[in-house]
Length: 223
Image (cartoon, rainbow, N blue to C red; front, side, top):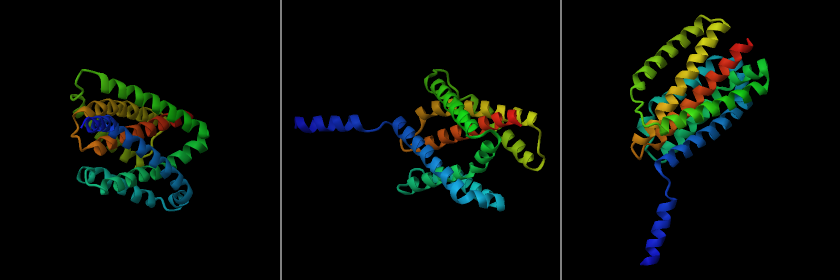
């Protein structure tokens, strides 16, 4: 009887917490997206250049997975498959930006952006997770700002802007997703216990977009 109690206690000690599960899948998404970057450079880059519409197909598929995640995130094993596909697609879609960055400033510019992203994401995450002040009031502002950024970004596709405006736009994007990182880290505490994949997707999108805007900010200074 005593041995069973000891075994049960040890098993409980090794049972991952909700935060642990979130960070595991967050790290898994980063790993799979890195593989996606390799896949993009190896198999898709030439097609993206010759057929620009192809990247929109991949991007739309990525958006579909994001907006339907609440429907599949708790359905095993479908959630593991779709979560991995989502992370893989994000890595593939970023390959044209990485190519442009390496052409303009070499691989060093990507490394700088990665380091800056890691530091900002970590700092924002610590602040969001440890602060005792509720960040719920940021939700409306962040959402409205995100909609505004999307609208301006779509306009920029058809009406290209100069390096100064790109610097301002990218700088706002960095601030916006730093705010999202703080907000989402605090939200981890209130997620239902079976929604760890949803929480991981939120954090992954935060760091993914933060990296994109930091890289664009650096590139705008080189233009």
